[in-house]
Length: 340
Ligand code: NAD
Image (cartoon, rainbow, N blue to C red; front, top):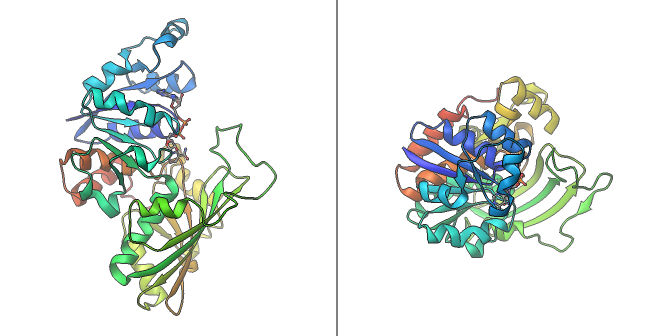
């Protein structure tokens, strides 16, 4: 069994902990928290050992009646690999601790690509990270774009990608985020940093991105234009994307008009936390104009990176092939059960 520690038990960390625990070849050693809050309570309810991330705050756990299993150092030491799901920037600060313990660590998309040895997407570059000390599982948006680019590039070749990312202002529990009544070009300067981030996965890809932020919490929506090197029929592209494991081509008859309906579908399907791990691409939006492909896709920011973290664990340790890992991850999580 691969022993996995989770440092940072928030939106991403708690989902990764559950997904890792579901795997036949992995066990969760424990999770590290900075303070005793509702997420610490969730960790205990779910039976995870809790480790203190910050020495000085340890007494606060005792005051809340929470028993600790140890310090984060001990968690790192007892783990074959750590998934660091701390807030942006904290993962980079933790890098020295992982190196001191000689424990490989997976950082998340909020970290700069400069602090890691490699960036990861299971569909695109699984085989390139084995043996690395620090691997970054790219952001929700970069994961969503990479899953789309990989099959298109392999089948048709890509001349240029242009994508407008309409991003949710914050996650549902992030009460301090916004905007609450506006539509923000964000960043205002063009192109946005998202394109270069996709280049950490596909270095040679020509891609320009634009970003906006809107008063929504459920999902991001991407408006995508890809100039291909050949001219397939739209139906052919639709079939290609429908065949991919982590892209769901939404059939028109479902009558899905937005992120609210997608989340409702996921909830009704019994998905944990109403998570939508796959890209949701509107089937009827997949259109060809000459060599230009157009489509809309929705990305569930809280969960699309979760199966990618599970695969990155096997990839960095070199325990299985890409095909085997992705199949195992999907089956264990229930991602092999299509949303419809
Ligand atoms: P979050 O704020 O929901 O969770 C972070 C957790 O880490 C919190 O529980 C916080 O208390 C804890 N923490 C803070 N400092 C810590 C420390 N020093 N040691 C241990 N734990 C600490 O954040 P999140 O949304 O889960 O994001 C985590 C990472 O994943 C970031 O890099 C983010 O950019 C990335 N990411 C987030 C999303 C998303 O939409 N939420 C999507 C993809 C990637």
